[in-house]
Length: 112
Image 1 (cartoon, one colour):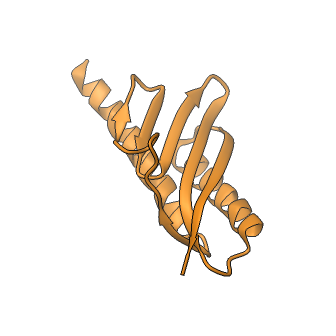
Image 2: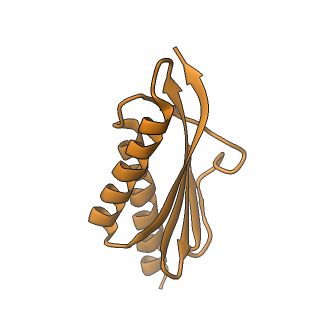
């Protein structure tokens, strides 16, 4: 049983890492941001996982994802947030074959 738990934890970590990659590959994004919610990576029996700038919550009808990032100065924030949502949803659904219920984008700041 311990092996199956480890595989489940690993798969959640892989999903979180793929979310980070999707966000960071979005034009205008400068970096992921730690928040009090995402400070340490932890997994609570498949219901939640946190990694720098990423929070994933499993819901009965799909995943709820929160991402926290900074954008570059001059970036069109609404368009960048929309692109992040689309990129994350496409990446997670292709990788994990789990529906994404929502992606909430939190722009923490603007950097040069």
